[in-house]
Image 1: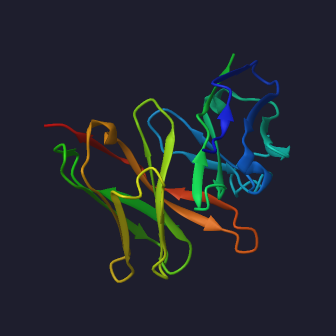
Image 2 (image 1 turned 180 degrees about the horizontal axis):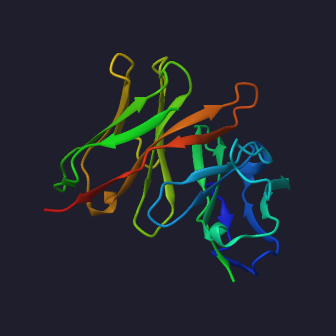
Length: 110
Length: 122
């Protein structure tokens, strides 16, 4: 079955650039969305349709990707960006619509 | 400002049915798709399914035989029913609004409830 794969952990120095990646066959057909989740809080949408930022999300968050890979980049990471990040896309490879989440990446800001 | 709030029992006995409701305020249920997503504590997110005001429902293949979702526009609520629960169904359950782009089918969950913890235990 299809799945989305993320690195479990990523570390970044304060003020530097963090890149979080997501891989999966479903990304050939559907755009990715990205979610930030801080401890004890519900996920928050930070990128939709691969590269679009919802209102209120800082410009330092950007999305990109092609083929089976998508990326979330945080340019000038701040301490408050330390969180878990999940990628997500729809998938129809099994002849039934499904929604996949990646396993999540824990971002540590050093 | 659309807000979602989950409600329901925090404890369910094994083999029984888990039932949750999501109350929607500040917006109409006649647009968007309305989803349930769960998260085992300290683990990742799992999509359970969605319901649309047209009556369309789509469920996760992993839970298809045990799950039912419905929507009540008059009460601005949608609900989840999961039968024959086991300890593996212990999780934080979120309701979420799913925005879908009709031309591409791409979607994103733009509004989430705060989540409700459901424990399956005797």
